[in-house]
Length: 84
Image (cartoon, one colour):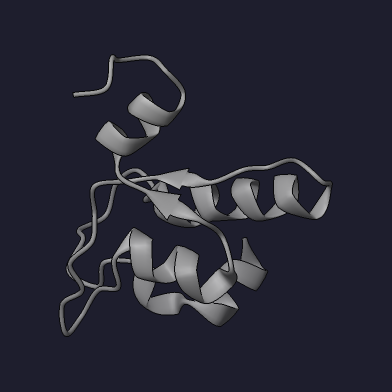
């Protein structure tokens, strides 16, 4: 996780109050490790809009070289839902 936050620290929301840790860096770390081990891992996220204070999961994944797809596309490709 330290490696992830060293490359994309803006993936954490600076306006988040105390409480449970944000999942984004953990998801990115797992996807990165799986890819390093040879698994075709990708991030499935609807978060695509960057703000001045927070980087989207899609952007962070792209910077890290991890493929990112929206949920609907992932479900179609994996044949979980029929194509339209």
